[in-house]
Length: 162
Image (tube, rainbow, N blue to C red; front, side, top):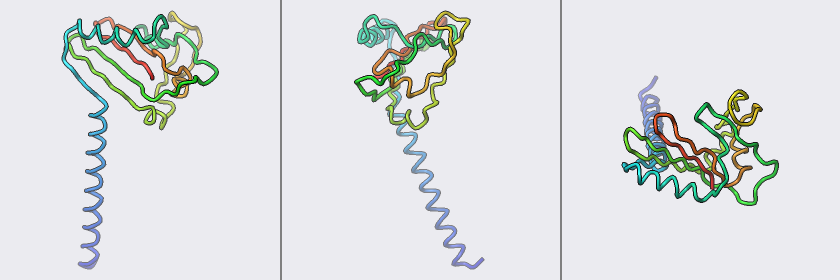
């Protein structure tokens, strides 16, 4: 290999390395901008959950998590009038007294439709059929309360789309 070829090869490797660092840095920045962690007491966390829950009135969640993922109602057959733009996740960590909020644009979720594969357990309370909940199914629910559950350890999870 000549000196000129080595120089060109090193230049190409340098450019690829800089691009890789830029892509990784951008990915980290995007993920950090989607996730927010806040320390708060249980009363403030409960108010945050209640504020979100109030938007949906008496409508129950689509999925129950406590006894394993159980689909509580089937996706509608038709598309809703409103387009879903964001999937929101609130998670209260009772032990650390920390609220995590994640806001995922549906544009990212649509890239892989099989992201939310949940099987309904026919032995658990809920609908006795087996199905998968895909991103397309979540979109058919429209803006909806997807998960509202308290885990046995006191942690709480609320997932909704709007």
